[in-house]
Structures are given as structure tokens and as C-alpha cells.
Image (cartoon, rainbow, N blue to C red; front, side):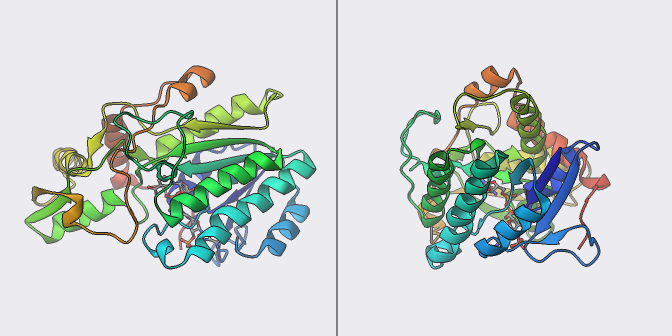
Length: 310
Ligand SMILES: NC(=O)c1ccc[n+]([C@@H]2O[C@H](COP(=O)([O-])OP(=O)(O)OC[C@H]3O[C@@H](n4cnc5c(N)ncnc54)[C@H](OP(=O)(O)O)[C@@H]3O)[C@@H](O)[C@H]2O)c1
């Protein structure tokens, strides 16, 4: 199958490259391409003309959109750019898929919700984003739906990997620098390893590709199993598993602080766990527990296989 992957150098994009089958004809794209990987093409999602030109040239049967404007706080002061990359570019991909009878895999976020629910979110819950980023990602979902293209939209949350800017890497860096750190203890969610997300979403996509879906776009929540945890608990567990795997020189003391003590430009949902039942039921797959996902991610830390080296 001819597949075009956007955001191939992002957290998720790197792990999708590893999860794609060898028999697939994969074209990777990043914002600027890669001098060390001439096969990796440059595609700036802000340039909708370039998107259409590239799609017409490659003629993918499946587009996997792992690219996004993910700077949640910066988006508050760059709403036009966030919207262009997260919504307008996605609308362009979806429109092309609808016209060419291709299919689209897209990733969305827990930030489409306001985080005020007392329970984990279902796909049927009403979105109410509280940030520019959340609004731009919700707009993408809606524009995929109105395009009429056949698409799977996986809403995920709290994504981390061994490569990239994320909570896991920040915690391990801080542990090497400081004996004590403070972490927010009143925001709850389910941390998702990009490796699990890549593997599960591609396995589900393979099943979906073998069917002729009656509805155009389907939304699935896809994060991790287990009781929602706070960032504080996640930090403690990172240090516990990293220490037992000899990945830490010292284990810092983790102090608990509130969201009010750690102000950010964009509002964070206080409770943003996602229920994965629809995904598990319809694709007959079990989503691993957040702790198992973290253990598996850390177990690969010393033997990193990074498909794109920049
Ligand atoms: N990270 C999370 O916690 C989280 C949570 C929920 C949902 N998600 C969603 O999951 C998906 C994957 O996220 P991720 O964590 O893998 O994000 P990531 O690591 O930030 O990767 C995003 C990729 O998009 C690329 N990109 C940004 N602007 C672009 C543009 N104009 N043209 C082309 N590429 C561009 C980035 O390139 P540069 O690095 O060169 O800018 C980067 O490679 C996204 O849809 C995101 O919204 C993420």
C-alpha cells in the first residue's frame, strides 16, 4: 500500500515508521525534509498548495497525519499558525482523500474537552475546548467529518517517547540536575507511550482498511488502561522504574504542587482521561495499562532505534 506519513520526525511519527509494514511503500515527510535521508521529503503543512501538489505526485492510498502544531502554550499567542497547521492543512488532506478515494489516519487530543468531567471521557461526550490548541484540533475533527473522506481519528493524551520534548524526558533531565522537583498533583489523565499508540493505531487501521466502512469518519479514544493518575504520580513512577532499570544516578524527591502554583498560558484540562472501550471492542484489541506502556518505553531507552537521524 502506498502510504504518506506527515510529521515523520515527531514523537509519534518516528514510532509509526517502525510500525509500518516492510511491504508498504512509505513516503515520509517532515517540515524541512532531511539531508541525511533524501527519501524523506519536505512538506510544510502551512502551504496548502504544496500539500496538494505532493499528494497528486505521490498518489497515496493512505495518509497518516502525525504532524501537528503541538506547542500548546505558544498557540495562545499564535492562533493563526495553530489553526493553519492543525485545521486548514488537515481539511486539505481530508478533501484530497475524499476526492481520490484514499483513506486518512489522523490523531486528535484530550484537549478537545474542558476537563471538568468527574469521569473519564467517552467519544459521545460533548467537546468544549479551553485552549487555542484544543479549538484547532476540534476544528480538524469537524473538517474531516464534513469532507466525507473515510478516516479514523484517534484521540489520545499525555503522549511521551524516548525521543522528543515530553514529560518523561523532562523528568529524567531534571532528575540528573536537581535533588528535589515539584510536580502538579491536581491534573489527572492516562499517559500514553507513542510506541503503543503507533502499534495499536496501525493494527486497527489494517483491520479497517480491509473493510468498506459505512460511515465516513470514526472517532476513537486511544490512550492507556488504568485509573487516571496525576502528573505527580506519573513522575514518581518514572523515577521508580528508571531507578530499577539503572537509568538514574539519583532519585529526586518529588513535591506535590497545584495547577495554580504552576501557571501556564494555555488552560490544562483538570481531568482528561479517555475511555478506550470503543477502540477495544470494535478492533478486538486490549490497550496496555499506562504502567506497562511506561516500562516498555523505558526498557527500550538504552537501545534506541531511531529511524530518522538528524
Ligand atoms: N504530545 C502529546 O501529549 C499529545 C497529546 C494528545 C494528542 N497529541 C496529538 O498526537 C499527534 C502526534 O503528536 P506528537 O506528540 O508526536 O507531536 P510532536 O512530537 O510535536 O510532532 C509533531 C510533528 O509535526 C511537525 N510539524 C509542525 N508544524 C509543521 C508544519 N508546518 N509542517 C509539517 N510538519 C509540521 C513537527 O515538526 P517540527 O518538530 O520540525 O516542528 C513535528 O515533527 C498530534 O496530532 C498531536 O496533536 C499529542
